[in-house]
Figure 1: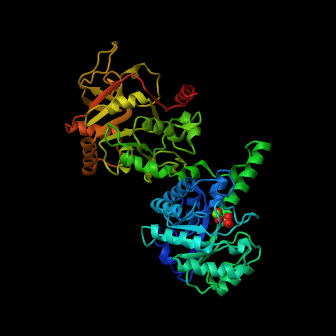
Figure 2 (figure 1 turned 90 degrees about the vertical axis):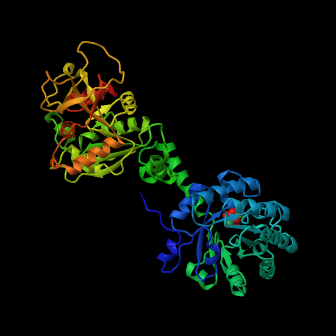
Figure 3 (figure 1 turned 120 degrees about the vertical axis):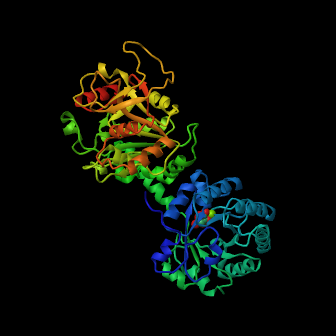
Length: 556
Ligand code: SPV
Ligand code: MG
């Protein structure tokens, strides 16, 4: 997962020693002699992109928000529309959000209401401009009418009065240069607004040259911090600092970049279909990361409770020994990564586990571990896979012990009903055993068979009645005459059962090569109770090429 740059990273990259700016420290950081860089956004996603790029604040831009609704930036949207967008941005980021509030959506009464609502939404500053309501974007000629100074001074005082905390700020935007009223009027207004309590002055210009902004900065007495928005003119950032500018807002560059890129990709798809565009669009993985999907999945493990309590599944998938018939298919990957009609065997089992309510899944990889690319499960490494057995791999997957713990071999595919029924069982250690093994085709493999103390009679149909059936013996050295059922490669252990397994493994010196079945046999020999849940089917094994073909047919 990509690391998210800290707020203020960019300033530090430029060699400035700054404390990372967080939501509430904007006021402290303004006026310290360095330039704060803020970028326009219009929703949670674009605000997050601004934060991740390393900028120190988000400008909830009226132009961007209006454009995102495909309406003119001319007070067509209501205060509530802007409030909702700003609130979404404030929730999406941890850097300050400055809301562009146009003329304050009415008179001083509206401004007071507005400040209360924006502050409560987590916005750190509002910016109001001294034009008449309804305003029109500063770069559109006509109707750039200025409000009387007294009226706007009243709005600033109202805004400051309505703010709840000292940290909340009110920026005053001077539109005298936009309206063509000149330098003197701009300075006069800026002074009046600072006297009324404005925390910063936003001096705006629509000129394509920086001259009038430079002139304003030179004559500004620095009674309050200065903010500029170089949409049409250009000043180097180093020169901005030299001019005493405290904040620069790149108000609409993200939006304009997005529009250009979307137009180009959409035109291309319209003409040529979707081939050849992959390097022009982000991956779905990136979309999910930005959504917070992976963070949600992480939390789900802790907080999404089912009636089952916490459940964890460990899938040992480190081994490299396979039947000759499969060898060419699994040279570059472990068996679990065999593709079964577009989805790997492991992925199919993880999805089944998820559907059954098991969100916490650890796959223990070893052979060709880098090829174990799966969604919805963590991957841990068994680097000793060449010299260790399944029990060793299982132990690598144990971090914390859940209320219920599943152990699932990586070369089988399980049915959701089988899993759901197993999860309902109340036993400390219960293995799934299949009674129909004598009727399945020859599998060129030593089967792990189980002898039980209460076997069903052959030739009779049965139903699952929770009858107790205890394992007397398990291993791959049990004959077909003796074995009552085949161990499927799926086991459920309670917290107590899993604790016992772990403790016994640690205490024993049975060696690192021991198989899971042989280890269970050791527990049986020590008189620990191990039960069998007997099934006939509900699972498939991918052990030979024939099995693989069969699985592909089943999942076609
Ligand atoms: C905005 O982003 O809405 C602004 C800045 O007010 S500008 O459009 O450049 O005037
Ligand atoms: Mg605006």
